[in-house]
Length: 249
Ligand SMILES: [Zn+2]
Image (cartoon, rainbow, N blue to C red; front, side, top):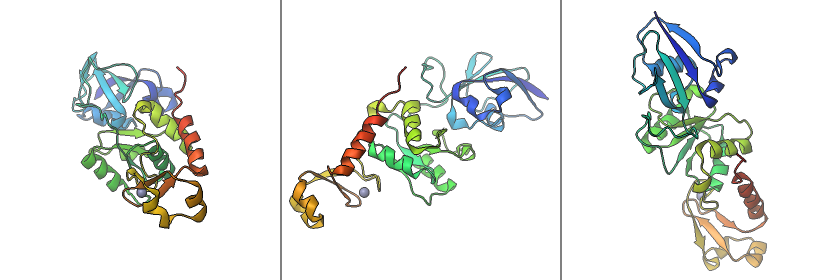
């Protein structure tokens, strides 16, 4: 029998039952197990984890837990700087790109509105999301913690919020994405890049009133969708501004 003491920090506590949150607790098991397997058996998906200390020393996921170990587990994307210590991944994904689970369609559209590269389809299954993440080095955004336990996923975030606009704020805050946003650079429908289009080139596709009142247009390089600064744009601009307002503190 191996008995180790665990302490989880910050938002990793969200995955634990109430009596195990914010405290050190003992966990015993009777097999040889890696620290990754033990932590996941406690309910915490590995992509949420940035740093594991065993008796004060950083270890990787393959470390075999020994009897009487004291194990501290820190979350991915935590604000405090752990760089002097060994991180579990070689490098953070500096230009974050996402693959978004099938029930988070509005989150995908909002993140595209902010300019983030988001693969999303409402018929993605768990295999699709996991393999796209591994193949294209994309961060998984999901509300399914079992999906995040898949071995091939290295970067992922369990989205806590349930309302789409709160989900956007959560992702921006936890990944500190504010400086990387490029609003109105990407098609919210298909994720294609937007380019400026001359009015003459697209005139035939415009409704009469749009043709009369607007001169500046963007067109999706992938699906051809046309965007202009009409009332829809004003609503979107207000939304973008609200999203990018950093929370105080
Ligand atoms: Zn498009």
